[in-house]
Amino acid sequence: MKQLVLLGGGHAHLAVLADLAARPLTGWQVTLVTPYRRQIYSGMLPGWVAGHYALDQCAIALDALAARAGVRLQTTACTGLDLAGQTVDCADGTRLPFDRLSIDTGPVAAVQQMPGAADHALCVRPIEGFAAAWPALAARMAAQPGGFDLAVLGTGAGGIELALAMHHRALAAGWPPLRITLVGADALPLAGFADGVRQRLTQQLRARGIAWRGGQRARAVEAGRLLFDQGAPLPFDACLLATGAAAPAWPRAAGLATDAQGFIPITRSLQSTSHPQVLAAGDVAAYADARPRSGVFAVRAGPVLARNLRALCEGRVPEDWTPQARALYLLALGGQRATAVWGPWSWTGDWVWRWKDGIDQRFVARYGSDATHHPNDRHPQ
Image 1 (cartoon, rainbow, N blue to C red):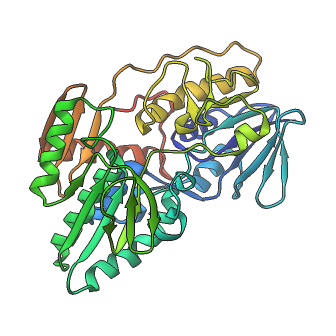
Image 2 (cartoon, rainbow, N blue to C red; image 1 turned 180 degrees about the horizontal axis):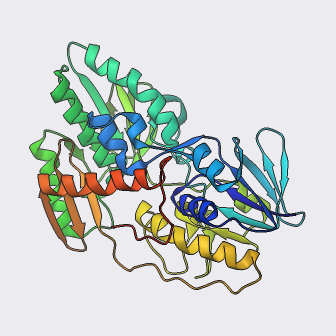
């Protein structure tokens, strides 16, 4: 029997598992390799921190989804690939053979790029690690009578949403003052967004008393303070590392084609440019048509990945896919308000929150224990 290995439990592989549950792949043994039995949906993580959801509401049970698909689950991480021998080396000591390999492991925390971060900062990734650490951090914030100083390093959408979520949680729970400083090298947060959107988001932060320290590049994290190339250190009680995604080391070490940052370049059919028996999607991939690293594109790639894996396993030609040029971003603002961003335009209100909440909850429910969804169903974003 031929072997298909799904490496990682990311957004795109959810669609693959749902496709396999709907139509088993004859003649193939499929194995899902992931360190975690669930996926905490990143789009709902700030809502959990803010207190709007229980963690279970934000989680998709990968073990149940794999069982419905007839897929064997191996709860471990990849440590390396042997592309000539077509095997995956795992942290639990096993070596899995593959005839086709699909990679959707997501990015890793960029701790190696920031000296001291591994010892003195809380990383947002992996999300399971952050979720495990957040209750203790929240307890520290609530118990410090003179207030708490939080530095958030990284000013993409994820870091900003978490800063706003923590601010809301502190106010709603009546904690002592939570003083948050967002730190970034750019003049404004949300690099890659239109200037008008960035300015409006900065106003939202200012209205909530969240400080923005821009135009300064952090060079190291020490115990209790953040150091910069220029300027005075920033003291903190805790530091949250929410910088951009980094690539895992093992694709390049294995000889798989990677770009300058270590991500896996893929063709429009989602196949590796150097090893066509290997496919990739999500944040670990560098798409043929350059796109931001966003869950929106990972979700949209899922049905294409499912169809192309099936086509290749059945000896058919895979289809090409060009991701949409522009994506809708829905950014939570802490309370039950959100901002919708479409190119240079943005809209803010409680109605945007309700819209985002509906999309997020439907996405998680789509892969729940009683889901009957087929992966070709469209995601609303």
